[in-house]
Structures are given as C-alpha cells and as structure tokens.
Image (cartoon, rainbow, N blue to C red; front, side, top):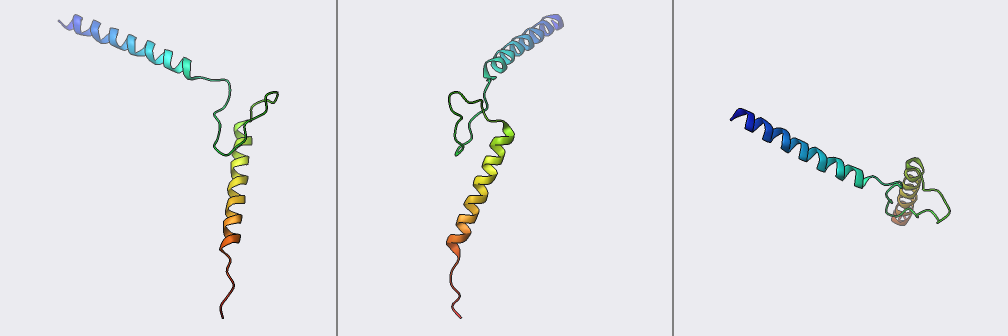
Length: 78
C-alpha cells in the first residue's frame, strides 16, 4: 500500500513539473512588457531596456508632480 502511495505521489509531482515547465516556457517573450504611458518603440527600433523605461516613468512622474504643484499655487490673501 505504501508503494502504491509513493508511486502516485511521484507520478503527480512529475505531471505538475511538466505542466509548470510548459507554462514557464510559453510565457517567456523576447520583448519587455509595455509600461502604461510609455511610447512603444518604432518598428525598426530595438525594444527599450528596463533602465530606459524606468527613467521615462521617473521623468513622467516628475513632470506630473510639477504640473500639479503649479496648478495648486494660489495668491496670498493677506
């Protein structure tokens, strides 16, 4: 009975391992995922690196914060 349980356990682990390997292999892509708000590279251009995307997002955040702070300035009522 123990041998049958052990065989079932090994078989189920083998099946789960094969399914996981198949899932991981199919989800790997050559290009980076797009970041919302960041322009996609042109057809002849190589994809942006993670560093480039991070710098673009940082610059967009700085610009958005600057615009928001400029819009909130109000004259003093003294």
